[in-house]
Image 1: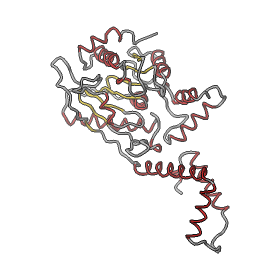
Image 2 (image 1 turned 135 degrees about the vertical axis):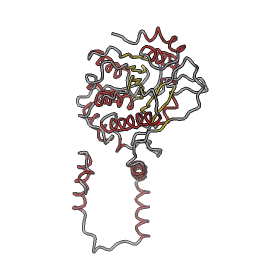
Image 3 (image 1 turned 30 degrees about the vertical axis):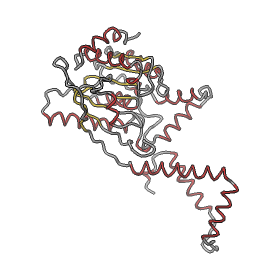
Image 4 (image 1 turned 120 degrees about the vertical axis):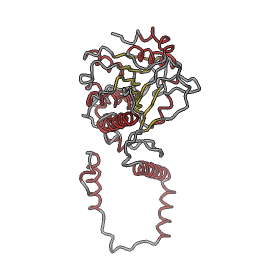
Length: 359
């Protein structure tokens, strides 16, 4: 077996276990092999005798087949940036338009952009302009929706994907002969964390602002939150075990890999950043995003802001009862830093935006 294919300790253990089992199998080369009818009868009798074990075996087989199919059919996907075409009302003369690159969350795709753009339905929006987006290599349309072998939860694998997408975006703007090549990065959850890691590691000069929804300071926080929901957070060593399990499930994730809270010192201190989170988010707790805000402030960032919505499930804050506040605050943020915005919406969000730099 190619050693390059065995990247995780878990995989190595499985390979060695399989080898040991194979060496302990009895030699059946000279044994009498039962005919097909006898074999089917034996299996049928065993299934009737152990229905619970049979059900478990069938469920496990279905699980394994669906998982394997998802991983195989979505392997080696390349980053490909595309412009999102959408039917939005014509902007008024007073509304400038910008360039946006959207970074989607886990178990989503570039279609997540449709939740944030300006639409004829007058739904709340935070993106009005030329929008670029792309799919991470872990995106799949199959049963699992995620290729776990290609997922790093915002670490190196995703950062390099965003780097490629950003370079393609700038190349497209150059081909268009665009006079404005400034880009606003918008991301959700895993995508939001990827943005922060990307900015800290690569410092792209054309990125002029970040709007990051539900970023997490570290995957340790996600593990801790999951344990808390299961009432296991008080068990000694469980957080370490849970974090190790995350690394085993998401193959590109490392327990010692980069995390957003460690990037705050290297992100440009003059870069405007708007963090958004929700008190009702059960996957990425508001405390994790707040910890990022506090770390950014402590490191000297004066243009960082945080809006904490009272309502909104994970990835659905712009579709809950606080949606208009989210929209207004974002446009007030854009206006504050001379970015394309809707003047009327920015005015509506001015007073609430003033509260988005808590001590």
